[in-house]
Length: 237
Ligand code: GLP
Image (tube, rainbow, N blue to C red; front, side):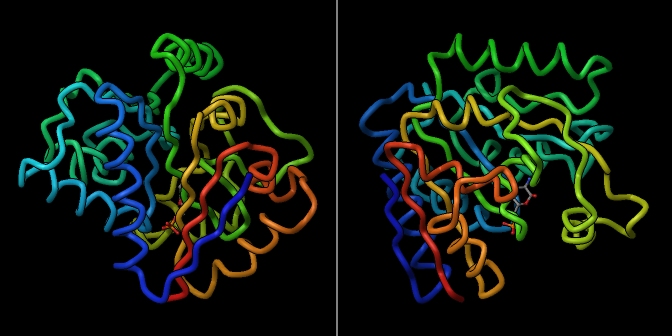
């Protein structure tokens, strides 16, 4: 079942998203959280960091698996998703970094690395709550529009649209990675709960397509219509 909740502004949306994640942590202290990057989750991670600093949230037994990582960027690169996660969440909460997992963007054998990542998720007992953003073309993680849904963690070729959208984080277009390792649809769809967050006018159409359009790999997020427990938080501003 898919539930859409609309918000007037980004801070309200973040408060709701952070509350849902906090409830999950309180309900199950060793939850496996699937985490996302992009600009949208930043306000959510800020709130979770604040609540943890105040002593209202305990991340000490939490395990995390991130959706994706750029190929070719080391963890120390300031645009890598590992760096992003450390900066916006892991460094600010009492999580044990050993329990935080981000795909390895430097892996030589992407297929083997992908299989290993999927095994890890299974070993952890699967994802309790998966946080997702959405790209302008409907991608989730880095599952780009395609002729078929890819099941396992894999190396994805980024579309020009995604590369253009991500140039804002780099010095110029030539610096933007062209490929990324991303969790596939199996791990995402096997998450027990999914929370998708999006904000801004520009995401309005794609959210509508994902919710009400046909389920098609041309709009990767449309697969969520087939999941039993999805909440979408959308804020117009
Ligand atoms: C990147 C990430 C996605 C994210 C998307 C949207 O492409 N791989 O996981 O959902 O950005 O980013 P933003 O929230 O900045 O619009």
